[in-house]
Amino acid sequence: MSKKPELRGRAARLARLLPAGPSQAARTPFVLLVVLLLGGGLITLLILNSSLNEGSFQLSKLKKETQELTDEEQQLQKDVDEYAAPDALQRRARELGMVPGGDPAFLNPDGTVRGVPGAAPGSFTVRQSAARPPAPAPTVP
Image (cartoon, rainbow, N blue to C red; front, side, top):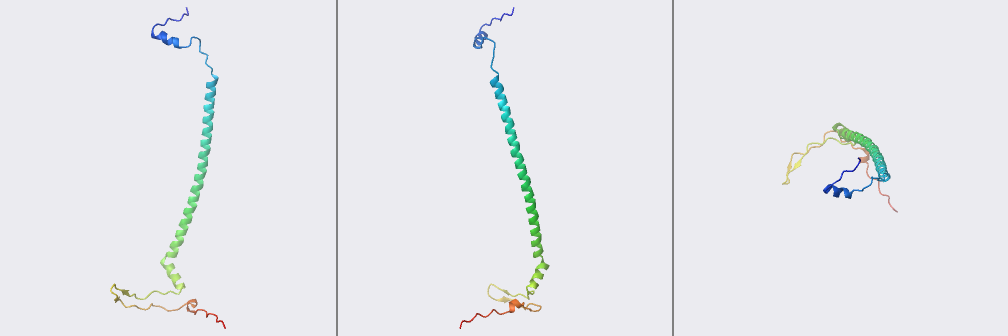
């Protein structure tokens, strides 16, 4: 009673295309292919993870370097601001022997002078290095 049912028409033609015996496909190539794909995927993930970790270390190093350079820039800007302060400029000018200027006079485009120039107030002390005449040139007999 385990007789195959008879197929007719289109079903019979399709049944003739299929193999008649029981299918005994070799499973070894398929299993080998799956194992190779899984192994290749695992190796690819390990390489990707390693490269991401390396990039992370480089990023940390660059962030630290950026922070150090930012701190240095801020310190240098603070130094520049201290040197550019009006009281610091005045002190350094006095150390160089400079005095505040007098009343200015201006030249008009037509060549006339507007205002009366005045001498600088204060003492006119000249530093020794500026007052010293140049050394005489050696004479050849």
